[in-house]
Length: 281
Length: 139
Image 1 (cartoon, helix red, strand yellow):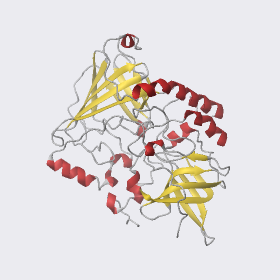
Image 2: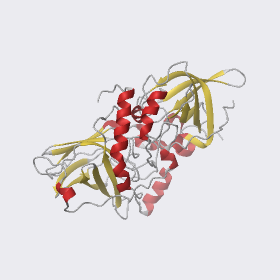
Image 3: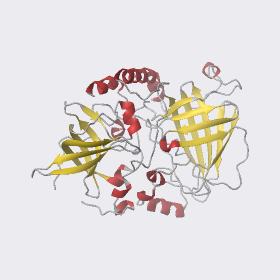
Image 4: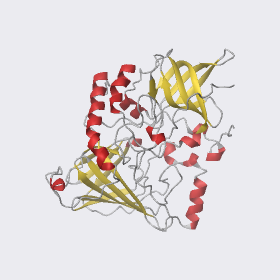
């Protein structure tokens, strides 16, 4: 796509999105789908020559009740703030007593959220971004699957040979190793740097985080994403996440995200969120 | 620009979000302090992670005060039809917004009314809906 957003092109894209999302609205209104079993739909899934489902394309996290590229309409309405669509249930975080105290304290330290400082989101936050806003492009061959996240220009290249994690490497996004279990791509993620916040509400992990992700192509336009986050020094039970990614019309593409350029928010944070300014009532 | 927005508005798409796009709305802005800013565009910066509108607002005493207004992520705005030329220096606009907690002349845009009267969305997922009748800035 060229970025010459002509009026005609935008009109076409808008119509395309409207048409392409209509059926999804009905299906997803019933909640997040389950992984498919053998069925004609599964048999009709697009596949690569190696037989694995073809996950390639541009995808966007769905809120569950509706799927779109936009969080607002052009009459000035903010749908996201108004709610209304029934999305996936939020994850449950069951902390150790010490970690719970830390979580409560972090809610008063929003100033420290790494993503607000333009650091990489980590996993699963790389995909668990606000619904309908930042697409991810998936590129796949017989040896690897690459996730190109628009948010933060985050890139994950996942070998699908079930190879072991490196021994001396730690990173925001950790190290991802994939394998195919039937038609599901299973990704084991470890080697985290321990600095990740899972969201803007202070939920967090440390360097013992381990994530098992499952990507299942439910139909040609829907990926079911499931993540199990374990961290024995933070959680007493694994944290389960589940939501869908919907295919974005081919006219769209990943756009540049140069995060530091316009980051002018932290300077306004007040003391009640760990910032340096006084709250003015 | 009105035509652009009307063309895209055929795809009125609802989506639920539980957080702002890049940072916590509540950490920077006060949802209890809606404000309506009427004035003239000085500069429109369509940059990540949030766009920024610099505008001059004429106060009741006749003095012009400069305000910085944060918008949603520019990539999302671009997909809605915004371009770097959507707002030009000198354009007269009205922004329904929320003031920053630190009391500076900084706000988060919810909705922008253009000179021709058309209203366009500018907020983030965490921005509350525009509050009608918000008071003008008080210095």
